[in-house]
Image 1 (tube, protein in one colour):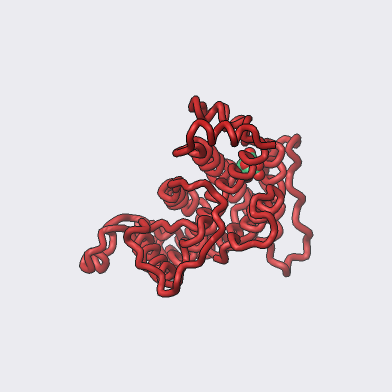
Image 2 (cartoon, rainbow, N blue to C red):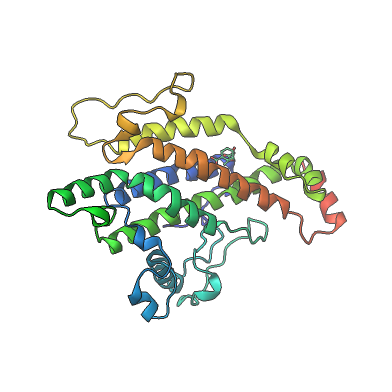
Length: 311
Ligand SMILES: C=C(O[C@@H]1C=C(C(=O)O)C=C[C@H]1O)C(=O)O
């Protein structure tokens, strides 16, 4: 995934940052559509489930192994040296790049905010079962037709490599999107440091959250996301135009469906909207607040007062 860090325009323009977040919606939706073609395959998320990995001395899950192997190669190719991409594998377990490091103009305040373990948890436990439900049920039906019954019917189509490859793509896109919250926070902080400084000096996360939250931006995003999911997942051969998404004041609101269980061709539209509403947006805001909580770390009182005076 191309870093957006080396940009010519102002990297802290809120409009530019929001356009990156908007573009990442497309990446995330298309990656979820691809993953949804395969069954749940729960075995690939269970630590120690593969003897072959244990025999190699790896005790994690198939997916964690995939992440480690993928990120090891990407680290050698000089990924994870810009402050807008964070590996799921601890940096200490990754090799140095084969190329000399790129020099980036420091934009974010030095910080250690990383929520990738939360992203991995909610993705594997809540998102994958939901978005693969159609493929999983279709698989069970076809297995029963071949006389397979009981536990062997369900959830596993054996496509462990394809499923994990697509999981890595989704996880990297969600991680980038959520951690972009740091750029949002730096942009908002620089535009009005005097609003934030008192709630950092006397830690008040709730007050910082109230300063960064923009409900109208979130509502617009969720409506746009629903339209995208409906349209991106449509089979272009369909003759009927896609149903328009429900407006916020309509009975079924943002969680309305556009067909049975909010399914639309290749993706669970409601599942995509709820991924953002219940996980991605809340976690992005947590990153924004956590980044701000440490924005003054290491600064003297004089430096802080100088910051507060900035117009
Ligand atoms: C990202 C921003 O900050 C917050 C988080 C948002 C999100 O995760 O989509 C949207 C609006 C704000 O509540 C922003 O202001 O654009």
